[in-house]
Length: 480
Ligand code: ADP
Image 1 (cartoon, rainbow, N blue to C red):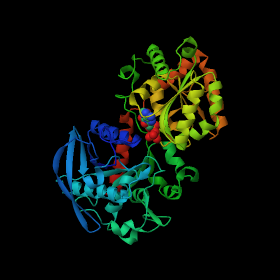
Image 2: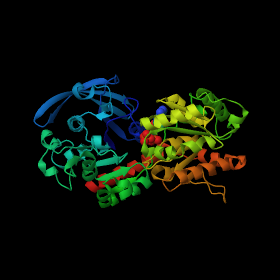
Image 3: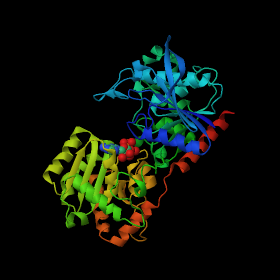
Image 4: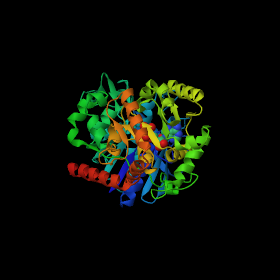
């Protein structure tokens, strides 16, 4: 198949979150299966990759602008950069100082129109368009409402929701400014509580919708997880498919991870102890026999409520009293940054906190920790628990979304399972589960069995890419 993918970020060119990982790994996996993928993203500040490959005329709201196109090819995947400095040559992707850029509706409408114009002008036709998150949500709207050029107008779209919490909601006055008709201001089109939502457009005007885990696909149809979108998702339940993200084992495999002091695998975990020592040293936690024997709990996260940091805050003072040490790496909400820095200052022999983004340290924590804590309120897929499993670091998670799908709870009767999970979103449930895990940790043979169960899981992208191909084929068949 020839697939046109449109998104706002992709590794290694631009990343703010897990979306960038997916938009890099999925096309590569599709290419390994023999498909051709063109990935259209903005040419943001600092991107130097690619060769000049002509221009496209982008007409929006009666104005026509000319954007440069750059292309970087890698086998069957081409990354197509839309270069329009007034919109994309900026210090960050979506906004600065906690404020979204006010012209985001226009910036991402521009991306959608440029992608369609570029694709339509090619001699070859695409079988399918795959859009991701609200930033490309307008594209299916243009396709299905007579706004797309003839060369692409009949192509079916698939839309992937990576996080329903980000909905691309803007003032309705953007419709005429973007040259779109007021007929789109309908409850069964873009209208959302008197405003317009790009995410809604993507959901309603795509043939099929996917999201990043089977469990999250069900959850977002409920009021608790639906963020106001549960009704429309229930309405499209037959067209909504959950496909778990894969992880990139070229980057995340303890047997060949250049960030670790020593490689290791399930047959020999000695390298894991070496990583633990390095992590403790990094955080200034005294390295002695007692500390090395004591379980180390790792946290790597955006410090926001979604990730359960409000629960952790409730029991923060209990943590240093447990028979464990804690290391945190993250940035986010100031309140949680301060809370963790305060804990580390008061308990320097038990708690370490590092505020910042550090890829290498993230790898070393995944390797050096014994347990990984992820008590999310909601979690579309989650990557860190999958890294943890591969690194023999036992996850303690709330059983929601992708966490539910990837971490099977330890069963004391059978000894089976690969982590520790809890259902209720409460600080007590979190604390009880952590205590239980620390208790099981003392039984070394049980623990090794849990570790090995996790390390043998396969979350490679190839399996996920095959499921996407099935969805693509279904979308194409529904169009014919
Ligand atoms: P989300 O995309 O919601 O932030 P995921 O678990 O899906 O959560 O992905 C988070 C990714 O970002 C992981 O690869 C994780 O290791 C990485 N990450 C998050 N915070 C940091 C940090 N402070 N330093 C290094 N890597 C981080």
